[in-house]
Image (cartoon, rainbow, N blue to C red; front, side):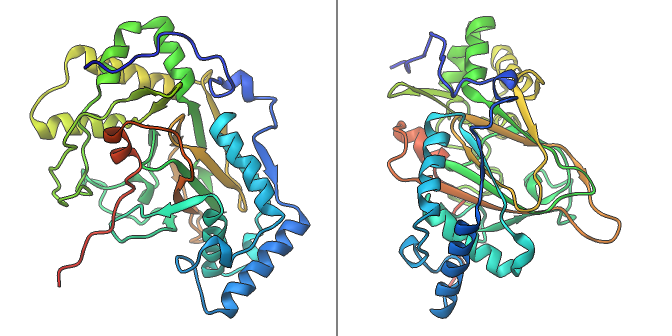
Length: 338
């Protein structure tokens, strides 16, 4: 049975382009003095109990005032622009472990924080680890190289900036709903192959931890479900997935993903933001592509350093089982041999 394809333009707040958000402040929030005091008290509370990040629930980290703002942020990422910038986290006030504990505490108020690497980390560093860049299965968040427009494997991806780079490291966001609109207007012939989907390369992070493993079924780039267009896209893992299967992409398939990538990089489609220390970026992963420019770290040894969380929201959008099993899976921790 063919999957339903949306063939009308979406005209709500999720289908934004660069000009729409340039002078729109609805997606920027600030932590105030009351909320910062509340955060500090919540931190001291879990420390008194001997708890750290990954070890407690939202009930252990009460945020009565900030919780109301997080509720508004939740509505913005679901029904508004699909992304938020929360500014004013005092990163210089706390140790790294305390920052992780606070960040985890905030995350528990948004939903279920899930693992996003084989080590089972729930709060992980995004920084240049000087890894072997020739490894085809490496993840570019551990390098200083360009990150192409893509989605991740959770409802929400959040980044907390602790240190910015000397040069570069610009964050870029694009509405996938606006991309869908552009495809419908200019290249509707691409929609069917994008909705049919592609086998994705697990890059060694799949159920069998096999470096050549790909998804068991095609994962749609777009899925129309319950009145919403959701997206899962990463051009590189679609292309390497086809290569590992030994089944080349058709010319139409290649043109379609090239066009999605092109739209994801276009200046008129994207919003660019340089994350400053204390900024928390929160993105709806199903309606937003995110990217990052390459960067150069400081001469004195300071490195661009961000923390990342993947979060699955409570009462999240309805997705088909196959789509949900991939886009909400995170990257489960590898089981250690006994």
